[in-house]
Length: 199
Image 1 (tube, rainbow, N blue to C red):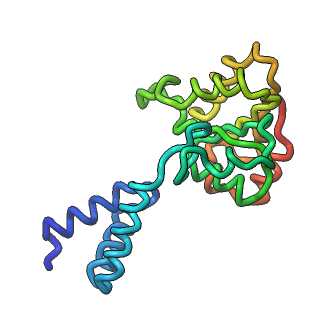
Image 2: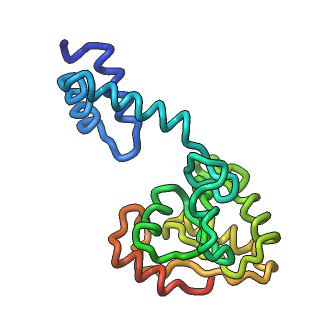
Image 3: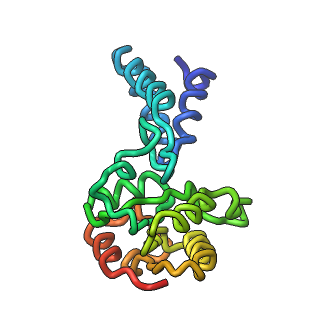
């Protein structure tokens, strides 16, 4: 199979579209799959298909789940009066891995970015406002990245909630400006969460 195979190029292009995978990694993964036993590629294909068919979004917080309501939202031991707002599932996973939040979450599904055409209506924010009016929420923890988009989204949320009577806090800036929660070391993230401040 030559370097100019359209089939190979299509495979490489497909992997290169995944977040965090550049052209080199995409080529390496493609070569690995082609050279490996057929069982490897079949298992990968089946795992992707099963995930796409069986995983959905929690009706309450928009976390990934196999059920209508995710394990976190249905856990009676979680403090439903504390909601931590995160951008995506990776960020939620980091907070859960560190076991620093005993409340529940709300996944926005992105950040406000006017340059990219992403406004508040593109995000999962209306359901957050509904949760706050009906769930006896005492504190909203804004667990968004300290970036222009993260700051814009945090400001929008705080403006929308300013008359709600709910305490609004934000992660401390131990997380570097422009840094992403998903890639922040555990000690820094833990400290930023513990030392969160009023917003």
